Length: 525
Image (cartoon, rainbow, N blue to C red):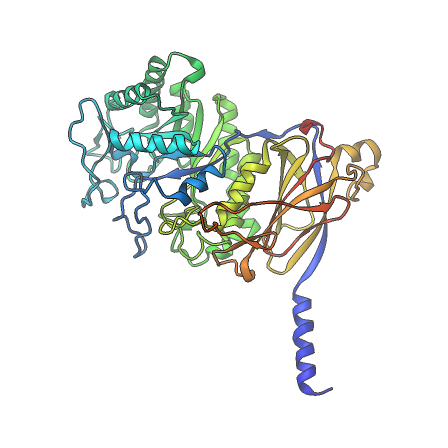
């Protein structure tokens, strides 16, 4: 054998040795739910940022702000319609500088760069003509609207404490805005009070006791303007980073039955210019750290029992517009879908992705409006993962993240597998916890079984990166590139049918959704 052949053989052997398949058994408990989400769990935001907003020597917002977004773009319309009822949260950093062009507000200026002002911009305004167009757009696309209100009107900057805004909230402009909205027949599902004013705040903060008093004012106003409880919008807050002491005081002051949902923000990847973001989103121990935040919010919600539970009302992974080489790529899905799974297990009802469009962390490309990889996985979650969350046990490998829900369309279960490893693939067998309890001794629990299957096939959706490049922007679904059609329609997202008695193959660096219609899960019947 010549040297060339030997060298080639060494390369082949080395490649084989670097990639291997592990057998994993996943046990799902289907008799009782561990949590329950809203039917519109998947949510995306639209932000106020103007084109001039820049971070990290780049300006990634383009014309994607609420005041300048092209609402007639066919690919945008079709991307939202594909969800068949997407929740959109209207809000963001500048919402506490937005006045509404109605009632006593006669002058309705655009945001302008202004040194020394909050976030470097002057006060801006939402003209009612634009609100009309936004609502026509929401109606056309079947959107469920959460609207973020300005919670700083009437307050003044403290002269003694940096960042603190003191005084009572002036509710008149919000009241006029709501009255206009009602008069036009526009539907708002929920109003969120302020943006990132909790704890230390971001740019501005309000004391918890004052915030709690003002939320009572907002709740009474909503009840006054919407006397029918069936059509009454929810009141949400505080829409900021979790601070246990601040949240406790706010909820104690506001009392029972005022806040319908406790909302908080998650940006657990740090700044968008971080050098090790790819490492973070593939590190299971790093991803696990944010569970402490979810647990804290879960506990405080259990204490005060608001009707609509806990929400993540904004989460973009990386702060300040996202990371241009990571956020719009396939790799971001390792973080995003793990967050959806983790939030749901801690009984969070809604998870709002920052953003639908705008910045580097958008589900849609800000310039072309073409969906980024995370968009397709978000649609699949919305279509497949039902509101009932199930307990999952998998102790074989931390790089395989697994979350299970009752299927959106019953019967059956839907499961997402997230493989963080670039080297290992997994052959997964599923077991029913209830089956083991009935039929097997404790020493046999780890053994796979297929007695829950019949002749039915299971439905599988395998998401992988084109050419294996996880920092690329083309995702494959069952080996088919996901790109809009020539007429700007979202491509078909059909499953492949696989014999239910065979293991589930989860390739390295892949995300896999699986629906099994006849899995033994009594709660999912």
